[in-house]
Structures are given as structure tokens and as C-alpha cells.
Length: 98
Figure 1 (cartoon, helix red, strand yellow):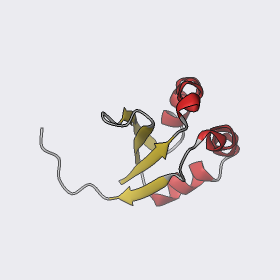
Figure 2 (cartoon, one colour):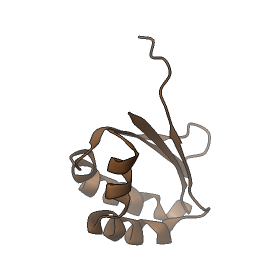
Figure 3 (tube, helix red, strand yellow):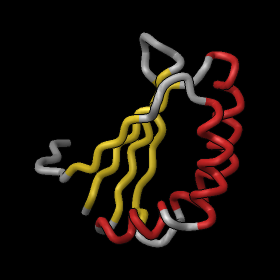
């Protein structure tokens, strides 16, 4: 399993637009082949910063998503809303405590 964390910083005036895009596409992202989990977080101190947190079966599944027409369409409408360049990490889960 691959965990993908993406930090997104939006211009204040574009936050609502991003939230609408995410609401409209979240089920398609989560149901994309190879995606097994999706969450959206918002920073408590800076409301312009969001994080997506997703689980992928493997690197190939994530790359298939990133190369899909669906991702390209969503990304083209989202990237114009940024205040800062997004940051992304692919990590491996080592431990889970509940």
C-alpha cells in the first residue's frame, strides 16, 4: 500500500471554488481503480492550507490515476486556484495504533 499526502495552499478567494470541486469529484477519486481511502483535511491555523490523504494499492495505481483524463481535467481546474505550489509525498505506513 502507498499513502499519498498532498499539501494544497489556495488563494483565500478561491477556497470556496476548491471545496466545490472536491465535493463534485471526491467519489470519483475514491472510486478510481486502486484508490482504497480518501480524506481531506484543513489546517487549523491557516484556513488556506488543505491536505489530501489517500491510500493506493501501489505506485502503479497512483500513476494510472495521475495519467488519467479524469485527473488531468480536475487538476487543470484546481491548479489555477493555488497561492503556492503544491507539495506531495508518497509514504509507506509503518504502524497503525487505534
